[in-house]
Image 1 (cartoon, helix red, strand yellow):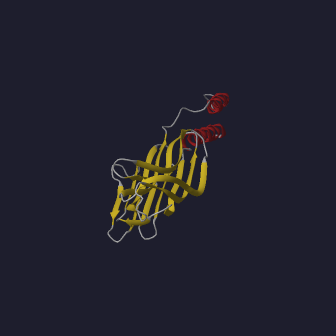
Image 2 (cartoon, rainbow, N blue to C red):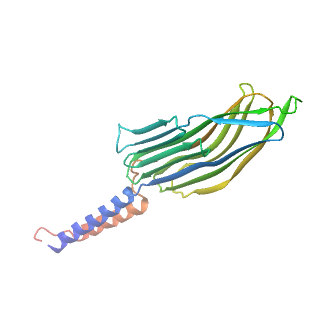
Length: 261
C-alpha cells in the first residue's frame, strides 16, 4: 500500500515539474507615443497655419478571440478624436486634437498562455496646411524652424517561449507636392526568448527647413504604436527534467511490490 502511494506521489511530482516547465510562456508589451506640442517659426514673413479634422485607429486581435477582432476608427469634424479597442489579451487606444496640436497612441499585449498570439495597433494622425507669406517683397525662400515635443515609452517582458516585435513612433511629414520633409523618432524591440528591454524618452525633435514663400505645404503629425506577440509551442522537456524522470522511474522499479505484496 505504501509503495503504491509513493509511486503515485512521484508520478504527481514529476508530472507537475513537466507541466511547470511547459506552461511558463509569457509576452507582455506596453507602448506609448505622444506628440505634445508642435511649432513653426519662420525667420521672416508671415505664417498662416490651419488644422484639418484628425483621425485615429485602434485595433486588437488575439488567439483567444480568434477569428474576431475589435477595431475602432474615428474621424470627427470638431477636431477631437478618440478610439479604444480591446480583446482578452490586447488593448489599444489613440487620440488627436487639432486645438491642442497633440496626438497620442497607446497599445499593449498581455499574453500569459502556453501557446497563442496577440496583436495591437494604435495610430493617430493630425493633418494641417501652412504657408509663409512674403511681407518684404523679396521673394524666394525663407528658413523655417520646425519643432515637436515628444514622448516615447516601450517595454517588453518575455520568457524563453516568447516572440515579440514592438514599435513606437512619432513623426512629421510635410510636402508641397514636389519637395518632401521628414522629422521622426522611433524605438523598436524585436526578438525571441527571455528579455526585458525598455525605454522612456522625452524631448524635442527639431530641424530648420528652407521653404518657399507663398506656397502651401501640407503636413501630417503621426503617433503610432504596434505590437505583435507570440508564445511558441510547448518545447520538449529540458535535460534536467528528463534526468529527474529517469531517477523517478528507477526509484519506482526498486520499490515495485512482489507478487505477494
